[in-house]
Image (cartoon, rainbow, N blue to C red; front, side):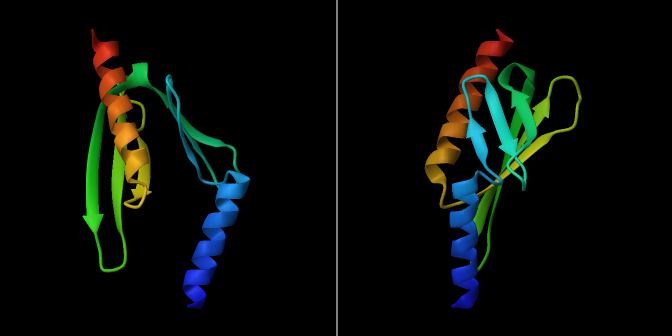
Length: 104
């Protein structure tokens, strides 16, 4: 019960302070770090491919998205818990729209 309370409190505090968040924009994706600063950002026009992987365990399941850059720069990785299904759907939809538009 204590572990659940600590995890819930951490999620609430992190959401309140903007720690370790992922923001979707029309131009790309921004990921913040532990102190709320921008840790990584990728523009849709620079994305060559998005790979998606998922795993299910006894206690939790998650989805992992890897954004491959056109320039060969290091990949941007986002890991989402499966409870964030609407965010994952929106991420996939935006990635499909923006990557197809930028290739034409």
